[in-house]
Image 1 (tube, each protein chain N blue to C red):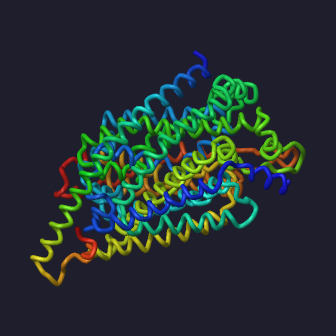
Image 2: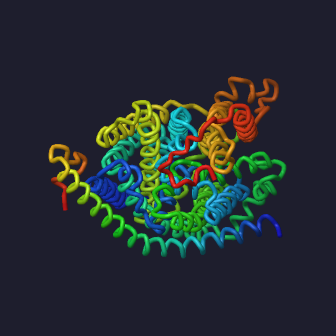
Image 3: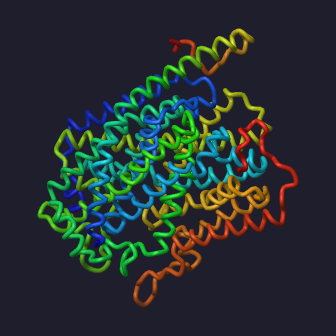
Length: 69
Length: 536
């Protein structure tokens, strides 16, 4: 097999697999985003309520209350 | 020359519609940064997205980060100057990333150790001083490594939009892009990074496929190979052929850099591994990403080859031939980094060129945000916090990280405007990154897989990375490793950057092994809170 033929086959294979993968990542990645945001929202609410319970003076300053859900 | 250059660069299909598309995309990116600010509750969320990144989002964000505009530009540059022979880089990157995905080599134990950064691993495995020295080296090399990102990315925009390349347009494009990326990175941290990476992935992946098909349709599949064959001969296909710009040492150096380091040691890639929700997810992420890692080199390189064919062998590129391949003594060619954007500006129709430009800006921003976040968090977590005895509140850490991001941004602007090295961008990056990764690769491998590795050995291994500075073009010229022959004007290279890199890796292994045997640790420093996986 010549180098030229080898690179031709590799290039076509990469294009095909990458196209299929792009469709998969687009669809399934959107689901991952939904789960990520839901998890972070729960964490933020939990951290907020825990710090408020423990000491209202030291409630987490990073969570912007005005941005709350 | 200047006039013909300005005239040639103006011939782009980039119009008002395309500016609108780019503007809308930029607004969406900044809006995401503002919107996700509400989710930042602690440092783990800010720099690790709360370790909740699923497999598919992980693939998108890993690809989004590693397929930056700078990657597109320097790979196109490699394709433009080296032809298909450069494809070996993609092949190496893909095969090695797949190997890591199947075996979990290095990244598996790192994920099990539940560290946020590589230097944090150094402390768990060795000692706090190793962490601090590792952090300093990593930050120094990493920031130097991204020194040309802003300039190279801005050159793409200037080239594709037809802005004048000899005026102050480049400077203003650099400033605008920098301000935008600083805004949403400082606000949203890793969460905004993964979300914008996803958007980038979707836009860019389809843009890549469409633009590639259009380039093939325009130039002809067989014709592309034929022109490279005529113009470059065997060296255009065989990376170790005589006359190839690569050679056996270069290929060996790429197995280390584009392969092992690029996927398993380079902190911005590893940051995704450390943010994965499980080790299983991490492995799957690497297996799928092996395709993107191969593609991120091969497709842009193919575009560079197409730009070469367009300029060399078509009537449409006739006016560019005298600019990029001037005949006559003393006439300097136009920077070949401009070849790709100018070609794309002429190839793609109005509307599509705007979408591709937006995708490229997305690529630019997603790389910048990840790199900025990575280096700034290393400075905060691995240098400042350990020096302060770990007594820093979450708020202080996040705010310090934000300040450092802005300071690094200032450096990027300065370095992009004033650095005058002449080596290819990819080679510059391999050398500067090598200051960190030559030592880090050795320390990670031996730290994870060799029980006798000691703190002093690790320190020696890490510090040997500074020798990589001898691979930088200005330092090579200064020290006589590279010089121009006075009689012939030929460039004589006594020790190439690739050879310097391979020697430094070998030396780092030797120093760490000898140092560990001569100065063993008397007691283990493994953190009892770790999963017990270190050392294996």
